[in-house]
Amino acid sequence: MRCVIVSTGLIVVLAGAFACEKPPSQSSVPPPSPYKVEEQRLGIAYPAVLRPVFSIDRCHVAYFTSKGDKYYVVVDGQLGPEYDMVREKNLIMTPDGKRVAYAARKGSKERGKWVVVVDGREGPEYDAIGVDDPIFTPDGKRVAYSAKKGNKWLVVVDGKPGPEYDRVWEPRLSRDGKRVAYAAKKGEKWFVVVDGKPGPKYDRIEGWQSLSFSPDGKRLVYRARVAGGDGEKWVVVVDGRPGPRYYYIVQGSPIFSPDSKRVAYGVWVARGKNYVVVVDGKPGPEYGKIDAKTLIFSPDGGRFAYAAKKGTKWLVVVDGKPGPQYDAIIKGSPIFSPDGKRVAYAARKGAKQLVVVDGRPGPQYDIIPTWGLLFGPGRSRLAYVAIKGGKWRVVVDGRAGPEYRRIAQDSLVFSPDGKRLAYGVNEWPISFMVVDGRPQPKYNGINRDSLIFSPDGKRLAYVAQKGPYSCVVVDPPLYPGDFDEIGEPRLPTYSSIGNKSLVFSSDGKRLAFLATKTSEKFVVVNGKRGPSYEFITAGSPLFSPDGKHVVHAGLKAHELLLVVDGQVLPGGIGKPVPTFHANGVLEYLVTKKTGEKKILYRVKHVPVAK
Image (cartoon, rainbow, N blue to C red; front, side, top):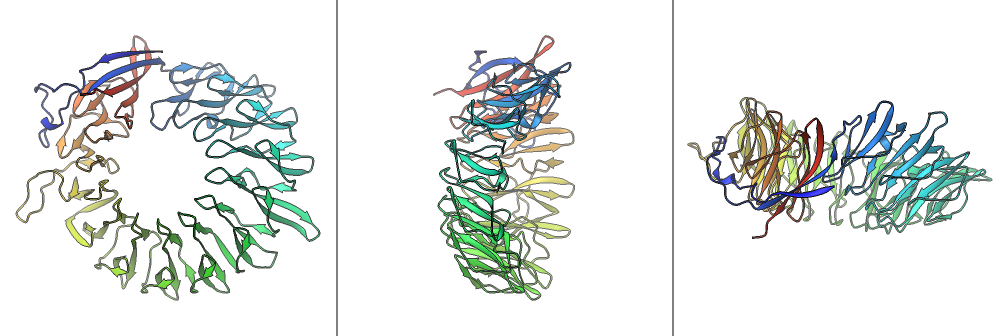
């Protein structure tokens, strides 16, 4: 590979030269470029036969290609070894894109051998590779997989084969990459091998899914079955030590607290008996039923809650203490506040529904929608939607807001600092936003997927419909504009707007989005329209970390063009997704045609120090 500096003066800043709602003029002389451009030729862009995989920043790519009946893996333009078969689901890339692994077969289906290829290097040949293998640790430093050799199975970690067993489950790696665990069978017994050391023997290990490392990687839990004089029983093994025997361990158990210090799981004590939740090894009260999906630790791990049934009634148990009994606990409950100090859930009492906060029942309503219960970030504010007598309202910190015909589903959104709350109202044929309890201007529709607060929480932006057209509303206004006779802003309208394309700069002072007028597609930055294109790629537009630059990629006359601050640069024939790194470097992959071949390049725009 070679790296060439292409230009130090190609990119210019023209954002300020755009006229609102008019294509930018190309006649002005651009100021000096803030970047130098580095272009790295990676290799031939072979045709992909299966969907490619990308690194998180989309600056590295791997995919399968074929020639005749042979298959290859291409990594950043480099063609890998030839194989008779590769498994699509087994092609994996580390998040940073620096490592790639996959399983491949050499030879026929009946007599061929399987290998795992890591970073282009083949491992030993085996008769089979685990269905979900190989796997990387999140940091990409370690790789593991299970393999069959003759009639035996083993686990390979970082290229080193482990002991052979009659059967093994696929391995699990801790998040920090320091530990490896897997279930193995020898003779009639199963056990878990942790960091190369076999643990206690059991009659069965409940699948590889039950093996779970704690978030910090220091602890391990799993479910195991044992046989005894009173029949088969299940135990939860925590850090190698089995707990009490129970008839059944409920699905979804056990779980770790976010701080890794605590473990909880639900159990069926015995056939025909009750259910119990075990927290930190201590069984709680018995109940007729446990809703396993409600087991939840607070974000700091200090508190724990779940829903349980006693007789014909349901209740929520918080920190071991049962709360009031109700006819039902509504789906999605209970929830903890971000600081863990508050807990809330919705319940049904007869024909009415209510929200219980910190054990105190709130007012009764006809309906509490399952999607309408939300704690805000940081400040532990609570909001929920309630319906009474056909009227909808949002209750914030115990205070009911104005009544409306309908609150838009999933439209409640807190600002990042938790100080502000917004939601949409539908009162056909009009819709509008309510921000901090105050109704905003009315439109023909509000797109709930577009709601976005600026990082500093000072502004809210969203897409609204004005007749057959779309517009972007910013509250309070971000840039100067015309106002009508009652003081409402006259907003530019478009044929359509990318609902999820709205993006604020890091300082909250700039807003960009994708828009379409008739067949023209373009990016609008602070109300100023950029050049038109036939197509604009996914991930656009994108601000630099300091918020000073904005980029997108567009297709015009079959040529891919990169647009930085409104300046059009020659691109290629692919559909790159540009990425701004924390150091301000803009990077992307692009395909260019050289003669009859398509070549893959990695392009970097590096800020030039002033």
